[in-house]
Amino acid sequence: MGGQLPDDQTPQRRVIYTGRLIDLGIEQARLPDGRQLTLEIIRHPGAAAIVPIHDDRTVTLVHQYRHAGGGMLYEVPAGCLEPGEPPADCARRELAEEAGLASGDLRQIATILTTPGFSDERIHIFLATGLRPTQGELDPDEYLSVVRLPLAEALAMTRDGRICDAKTICALSLAHDLLPAHLRSASAGATLDSDRHGHHP
Image (cartoon, rainbow, N blue to C red; front, side):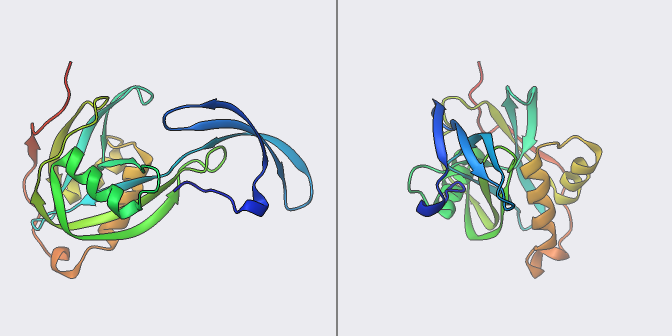
């Protein structure tokens, strides 16, 4: 889940807005030197992000519309945790829903804080290998297509700005460094685009 505090550290909080995904509030916080601050803090349930790497060393990404991001972005499959949902279960669900894939070997490789200056959102990053097709259904508010391309090209896209989503940059870099031995020497395949699904207007 998100970065929930232990009961004895729960800050004084005045809720400003509670939505479907986030909770915005004004909190009283104490710094290590004793000073007190009033902070605007977003509480978030947390999320899982998945790097699906195929045996030919290609990776499946989604090309997804993000209103707040200004348009279509390349990202790893990802989504928010449901109440009480373990991160690994969320990762399996989102991999199926967004990429149409199931993994025979799903391994958590990191947990990152996305914007600790004002939010407690934590994203749990998973490396998925041993992939096979499966059925999945997008959420009604998602608009995306599935793209499969060489991992080397995806990493190049993080360096030249074509991929600017922070979790995706972090996830691809970590996954590359932690590839299983049988994938480290695999030859990179050609770029493959899939029109698998996407809720289009």
